[in-house]
Length: 231
Image 1 (cartoon, rainbow, N blue to C red):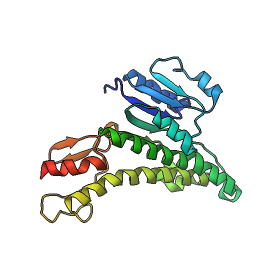
Image 2 (cartoon, rainbow, N blue to C red):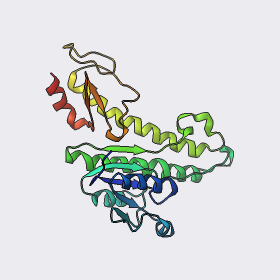
Image 3 (cartoon, rainbow, N blue to C red):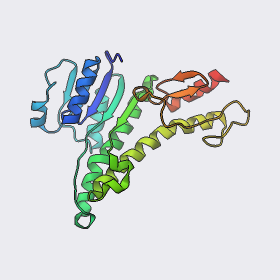
Image 4 (cartoon, helix red, strand yellow):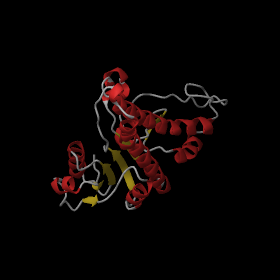
């Protein structure tokens, strides 16, 4: 895929997984905006001298003002990839409220604030966008989170956030077509809205299939025009 001149924010981009992600994006031609708070980690960052990498210092992802500064600095945001987070492992009986809130802040709050900022940055462009959140296996298979309950709960919240965010597009289609719910047919018999697990287009979310036409980068704001087109 050709990502030339496409601007992507990668939180946690100076870490191990983030570095691999940034490397793949650079190879595809993207411009990567990488926030950081740990100067030593930024100094070790393999791509710190690349012209296509914009390192943004002093960004605390739990703070709304910092998030606004980060997302406001990126022209025509094409994608937001949220890798930043934290890990803690302890039995629930040894986990304090402070431990729990630290995990929620590092994992869920950062993801929520970045998603919200990304949505608000992408909608005005009219071109849609892509939001990718990184969770973990226990976020979907809760029993695997035994011994790390606070971490599991915070990552499960990230998974729920991601699904709920995508659901906003589905709700927009239901409203515009008059169908009562997913799986139902509209009163005029022209639309049936069906949710599917995968259309093989994570890089162009949210994808929508209308008959044989594959639509990419669909946002709630685009739904009215799509419905008008196919009526």
